[in-house]
Image (cartoon, rainbow, N blue to C red; front, side, top):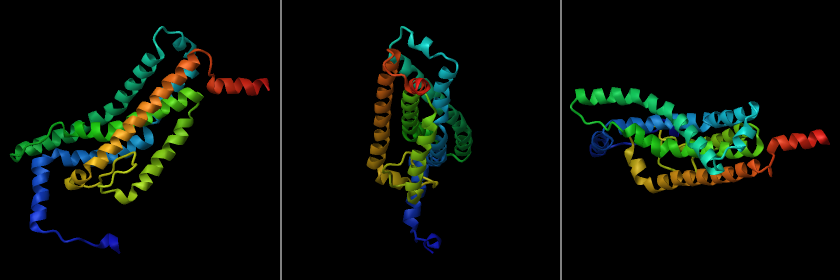
Length: 242
């Protein structure tokens, strides 16, 4: 029955929410949060396929030995590929956001209102990018270590767990360990403002996790270049010899 309840709101409270929508969010900010809510689910569940398929392509094409023999350092090789994949993962969302940005900007101009033309970019940088960084780094670590697509099995479990734990926070306001920030409502800027510290800690934590994962991936890659770690190929060779 609680789902059918309602809470009374005063005129002053509604007026404050309307003013925040116009003056602080400048219309596009509210829609940008809702956009990132839905796109965050897409990122959490499906972005893992991009780096895993890219990295496994080297093994299928038998290009690992050629890559290992490059004069470039392991840090340079891994980080160049990592940031290239991060950019290509977030690019479709940036392009998709151009449509509502254009529509809302026209609406604001027609009604004499101001719009924040970079609202979608700012919210994606704060809400979506840390998730993409962490998932891509996780894929790099497991795929480099095992030479298998095991990350595709493990990472969705991580994301689904995070989405289920945030089910009670679908409207936003509580930012604990959520891998995908939820804010499935148009407006409610006060929830973000009141819990901004928790939101910052959440996003910085996932950024720090991504740094840790990618540094370990660089170390694993350097070991494999020196022939000290064979991953799945070494495991198959051991089984075949047995």
